[in-house]
Every structure is written in structure tokens, then in C-alpha cells.
Length: 130
Image 1 (tube, rainbow, N blue to C red):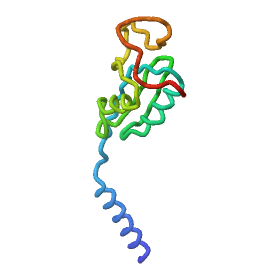
Image 2 (cartoon, rainbow, N blue to C red):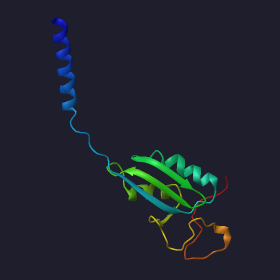
Image 3 (cartoon, rainbow, N blue to C red):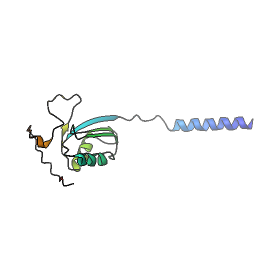
């Protein structure tokens, strides 16, 4: 009988603890892809190593080929503007946000040395002496 009372008491305590925790708050994850001119693999690594540790960042993909930084983040902990500012603080101006299914005709995988001109400057004010 004593054993049954202990089991019931333990079960009641576990049940009351789970009720006191309340319903779990649903995390609102958002995604953004920034168009960022990255010159080399060192630029990619610098962005990857710093932005991954920004508050709220859940996933990060940096592409030298596409010239993009994809971020999945917790909207309760950070924002698109905060992430943009963090990238720019590293010395990489954000040209804009790449919309899903972007059909703008702009080659997001361009290189500054290819001699193209579509209205933006490739001098981004940071040193490439690695």
C-alpha cells in the first residue's frame, strides 16, 4: 500500500510540474536571403563565422558563387534589419534582399572582375590583403 501511495504521489507531482510549465511558446522562424558582394572564400568564412553567432540565427548559408547570405532566424530574437546591419558591420554592404524565385535578370553569381556594369559600385571599402 505504501508503494502505491508513493507512485501516485510521484505521478501527481510530475503532472503538476508539466502543467506549471504551461504551453510552449511557438517559435516564429523567418527566412531572408541578402545579396552581398563577397570577393573570396575568406569573405565567406568571415560572414559565416560571425553571423552564425548572432542572437536568433537558426540556419545560415553563405554562397560565394551566388553572392548571397541566406539566414533562417527566430523573429522574436532578431530581425531582418539587425541581420543586415551585422553583415554590413563586417564590411560587406548588403545590396538588397533576394526575393524567392527572383526573376530580376540580375546575375547574383557575378564577379567584380567580369567587367559588367548594372548600376552598383564594387569598391566596398574593405581590404583584401589576406
